[in-house]
Image 1 (tube, rainbow, N blue to C red):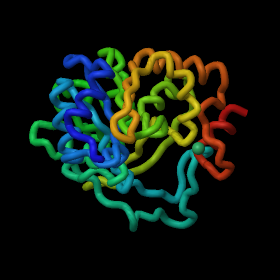
Image 2: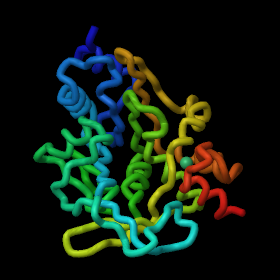
Image 3: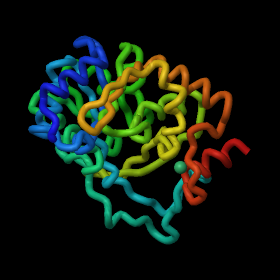
Length: 264
Ligand SMILES: [Zn+2]
């Protein structure tokens, strides 16, 4: 039994979205177990519900590994010269990495959609794109901060908290270590500061967010809406109270390892 657009509308109504409240959405359209019309249906239904829709259209494949860089940077450098052979050169028309999902890429291709200019962590948006223009190479999370100031919502559709990119802003607010990375652009390799760490431990936050989240089931997927500002406040307090909160437990994780050793 596939899910109809009507069922999706019903599910989204339970989240009580308000048209003028901006939404940052993370969507796996396959999690519904067959949505009639797929990504196009999802985007159409969402666009009918909210005026401003923001989605990440990240392009990790532009990243390069140099021969050296800052200490405790959650990565291994190349010993001799940098290795740029696998990287693709960023340009503004570049499609999102496939793992960003079909809905995000479809939104990016909408002729009215804007895109921010970060070569790895760009966002696309229809509606009011003021948030996107705040992003810089040193402040990739700035659009999330603006969405929080506008009392925006995070929408998770068929994805878990590991995809909730806005949680990285709470880490930054709590002064958790961020990272330096590099990306290939048309004329040079750019240094990217304030890059967030690992999100594999983010599902640990779920119980703490239950009280502020609104949830519905659509087909096989859970969809939830989380007020950004309240979420950031809660997660900030969690990290301030426990410097290792929401880190992952994989012993080989260089990013979480770097955060832990930065605190020793
Ligand atoms: Zn990790």
